[in-house]
Amino acid sequence: MNDGGISALNLPALMLATLLLTAAVLYVLRGWEQLTALVAAALTGSLGLWLWQVDLSNPLRPLPFSTQVVDLTAPLTRAGFTWQLQAGAIPVITTSLLLAAVACLLAAFINQGKSFAPLALFLVAGYVSLALMTAGPLAPTLVAPLFLALLAGLNVFVLQSGRLSHTGGPLRQLVPPVLAFPLFLVAFWYIDQMPLNPQDVVAPRTAAQLIGLGLLLLLAPVPLHGAQPATAQSSPPLVHTLVTLLYQLAVLHLLFRVWLTFSFVEQSVALREWLTIAGVATAIWGGLAAIGTNHPGRLMGYAALHDWGLIILVLAIPGIRSWLLVFFLFSLRAASMMTAAAGLAMLEARLGNLNPERLRGVATRLPWNSAAYLLGGLGLVGFPLSAGFTGHWAALQLIAESDWLPAAIVLVASGGAIFSFIRLAREFYGPLENRHLAREGVVGAVFAIFVLLLSVSLAAAPQWLDNPITRTLTALRG
Image 1 (cartoon, rainbow, N blue to C red):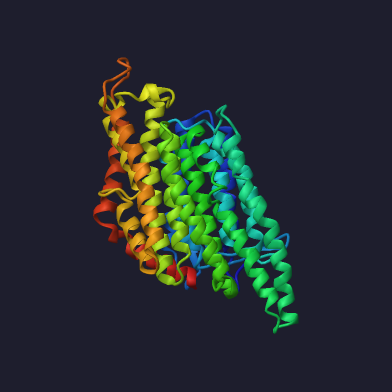
Image 2 (cartoon, rainbow, N blue to C red):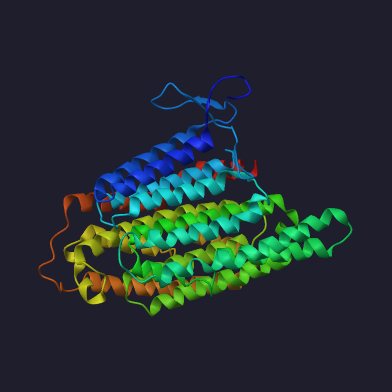
């Protein structure tokens, strides 16, 4: 019942209950992999598209395919926590749902494990809950690392997706949020002391340093990066991509909320210095480490690490312009990673595994999926004519305005990953090793062409992202 006396459904309760109940049912039916993946894709895709269209100024909306009315702004309160849809949460939730929809749709035709679709819904429900949280025993921005740690624990099972694989990579994802949460708790104590002595400059400075260090840990730069390349090698490609993007989107959202809530953190010189050092180190290691691997999954992981280092480096630049670029880079990152993962998943499904000796000449039988993997991977390092090219060059120009040296270092480091992709392309297009390898199926080729067209379209017309990114930033700023 809302304030006007109209019986209406509570949106947070409805959304979370729908995701969790559907996930539970699909887990029971996980033996029908294609069916469960298609249902998960339809649910998350329709929810995401519907949510993107809502207008909070008119909170009462009819529920699609129903006579029921849903109250968009109704709060849900349980155990001291409050969940409520606010304008700033809409872009984050929509992006999370659409990422899950794309991954599940591709997984319906490329086996990624029996339990992927239901576990993906459980995971998305967790991130939606985090984005909807508006109040709690502690400020939501301070308790968020605990939720991220719990979701990282769920990631361990999602990354397995019913397969027997090494758990070292998934378990490493627990390290950053577990280390960060105590720092946020101590920072909360200092924040509580600030009203007692407004003239004290030690409390805000200490709180800013603790929160800044906690945020840096959550970003998982070098040397906390180990989970990304390890899971890229051991986990199904689409599963790794979805888990990585959902976590990093949540961390970026948390970082923005912290800077809006605590101005003394946004003004911290120490945090910007830490972000600069961490970003450069991560981008360098991602590019250089790529030279030493010939496994396509691990190579994709290092390329994604290099791209993430560039995003961290842009975060160190003050001003709204840097946030516009961060969201632009993340959008291109998502497109490139999904393109590469789609191609790699099909290669793995056809070859049985991704051992280097099996990859020789694979492009002669699977040309479209090989091209999807290579173009998506090169997009992560800003190769010309790839989706990531525009974003990388814009970021390097922005960084060079204040200091040309980090920009030059990142540019040189990207050459290592580019060299590795070119080396792998020679293997792909060399003499065929496995003469019994079947040719590309129609469905596999169609999906590969689709993601290739998406990637090429963003490379040719990146301005398509201008309106969604501007709307996202406006909503986040309130």
